Length: 280
Picture 1 (tube, rainbow, N blue to C red):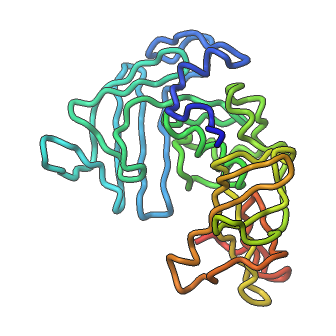
Picture 2 (picture 1 turned 90 degrees about the vertical axis):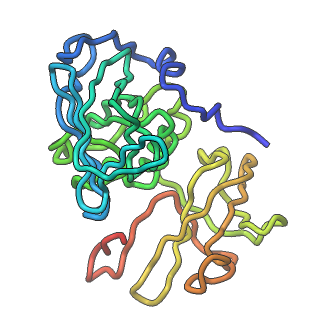
């Protein structure tokens, strides 16, 4: 089985192969790259909201709001608090964070340590080192560039008002293969031997192992849902994708019928008259 390029994601390793080298900046944000001084937000509509502020004096503030309070780990105790004050520095394209204690994001469930700055579509993102594949998947699904402040990745405040698209040439070169040139769609051929779904999309379409695809499930005449699948085998023109929801919930069908539409992009639509349906 092919392996995705070592997704132990070290930003430093692939930034050296990026088409544009970024020199080290000082804490004021000066240098050849964009200034990272400012506030960044990520969240999911009130349940978990997180803000990271980087000041020119080198101080960093991590704030959780709503149910997404910052958790500080000290020994075996987890104490939720509002703000965590620490420091930051920048090395190449990596923002390195240092807090007095281990700050754990309630959104990602991981400590905030190193964030890669990504200028794409005129927007400045800070993406966790282990999150670059997820960022590429979000672009393919149409979740980024997002329309509004809500999203999985730290985005500089007000940059969500910038209208535009992300050109994969803006990303580090080694990650460009995981971003599609354009959305793709195919159909289910049959249930695969391994119990997944065999789909008429393959390497020639930009499909890769670990890629997220979506079943366009027509629940009713006016209600369409997009159910996730994960690709686990790819050939030149076909792929197999794992469909877990049929076993995890009585709400979803146990299998996906042959001929069903599979897409790379999430787009909830209720009907032509009602317009787009807000994602849940």
